[in-house]
Length: 212
Image: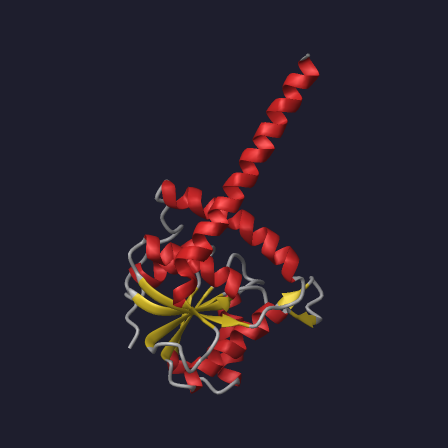
């Protein structure tokens, strides 16, 4: 009897978790799809493109470039050269001296022909929520273009919508291990929902940085 009771409890909790994950994913996709673009020609213009960070390299040896990183750089450069954005705000993790996503993104953008004065860096984009909130609160942007892969863009746009910002997003090409990233993203959407319910703020605030 005891075993059957716990089996029912575990089954119920598992079913509840599946429903929560499915529900969070469904809501995010359905409420953001009209704001997300694959075509540069169709994408509306904005002053600022928010380029969301990720690790440049795969593994500790730094011998292989992360295709998710490279494809985001490619997308940001393409939008800038097409005149769809005037400035690029690179936002990522700078948790310790040997790991600096914004600096590496900036270097690659400059190498691809984006002028240094057109690039701004947010070193405290420790999460997607942090990046979105700091783009508004620190860099003064309430209307901007988000640049990342589609699964990431959907969550980022949903956060911006929840915070009453006006955003669109452009989809960079995907990378290797898409299915692993997709599973992680579905769990991240559950965490995002909790963060929004409790009204979590960015880890760090600071003085306003004017993009001009």
